[in-house]
Amino acid sequence: MNFCKLLLAVACLAVFTTANATPPIRPMDGSVIKVIVTGGPNAGTYNLTSAETTCSRNATGANSFGNQYSTRAATGLTSVQLIIGDAKKAASGSTSDCYLSIRFGKLIGGTKYEFGKLPASFGGEDTGGKGTAGLSGSGNTTTSTIEGTTKSGVKIQVTIQCRSVLDLGNKLNQN
Image (cartoon, rainbow, N blue to C red; front, side, top):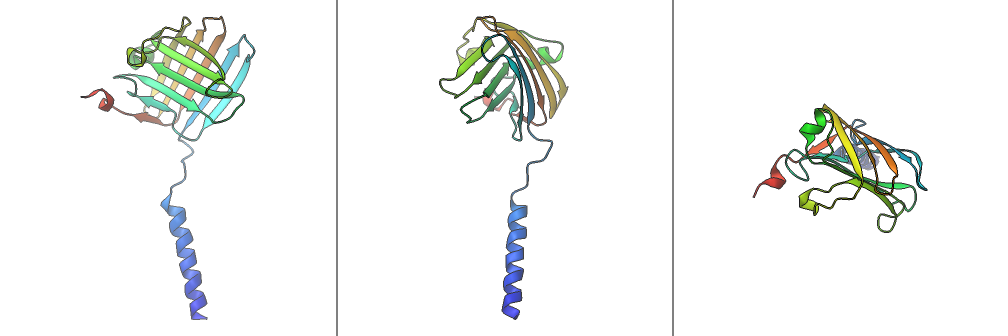
């Protein structure tokens, strides 16, 4: 009988240790993304959530802000990529120094809509579309609002509520 009690105690300890070894994702982490597409075959409103961090600071250059949301799904809105070159300017109102890409369907081969200009560190390609981006809040409660029109005339509005932000500081920009 003592052996059974010992075995039960070890099993309970193992479960308790395993449960505490990997902390659960906090409900405040991640992002909430709303995308409105006007025009084209994918017109509509899309609401996305991610329990994982999708927002970053200083990842594409000093004082930059971005979002990288992607899923492995084969249908629907599967990717929202944002790069704001000057986060301080975006926080003081808005800036046209931004790039936005959204994709429907497979990440390779799906339908992509984009506007803005990529930073020089990414080739500096101008997509032909135009848009603006603004930032509000600070720390892990930053909201970005992006509006623009693609080269083909599709209008896109995106609001990204970041509940956690990965800040890389100037680490990527140092030699």
